[in-house]
Image (spheres, rainbow, N blue to C red):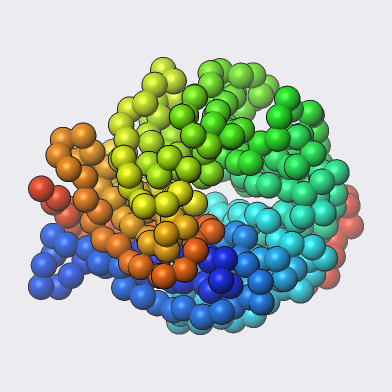
Length: 334
């Protein structure tokens, strides 16, 4: 399993989560690479299989091959800051498309093999804060600084729905089933039905939420200015459990690491987090509340981390813890 983090200092950080040979019950974050890939702060990262990308304020998307721990190219099509990146992946081997959101309110769809721009179109009147792709790969949701929610038809490559929200949302996420989606507005997280966007319930955090990641069986993980990692039961609206003071500073990224082989129906038990304190940590959420929660592994980048992404985790022993643009009528995601 690979973890990629971006930083305010322009550095990209790559790690591999491995089991120690002399201690198979222990995990470690082994560095893969670290270098200043951008000339300005990194805003977003995304990972799918062996492919990773990062976007920053330098109007550039960088592409990485995790199997060789190297940068393999860049996309210079963006005309403004890259604010959000998301792969369209129907399996764990290699992504089909890359979706990018920009500070000018537009969205671009790229073919991921090779990386070429298929379509660029406007979705929001102001900058895009976040994007989330539905598990079918046919549509995506976006939220922007114009206080609106947008829906993107990835087959046609156009905006298919647009509505005003009561407040600016910073994060939007589909759940794993695709039946619900979540929006973050400061301290509140709203839960909606994906079919008609009907509000199901609201989750009230004590401080501002900065990142969110869905788990299985209706669990949503959030992190933010309270320095905690909180797991919410989105069926009841109550806190299921919480890792208090998971970091010494605000949490800027959370990744739920599921098994790449899809075996079993158990909840993913490994969660990774990144903070502006520069530390990436990996947690076993099964022991939360049973005893003092210590991370399974951690790495200190000594930089101000801004974002986090991770690939699927391969099965291993469970650690025990005390081309050219297409026209609008063509399929942009073939």
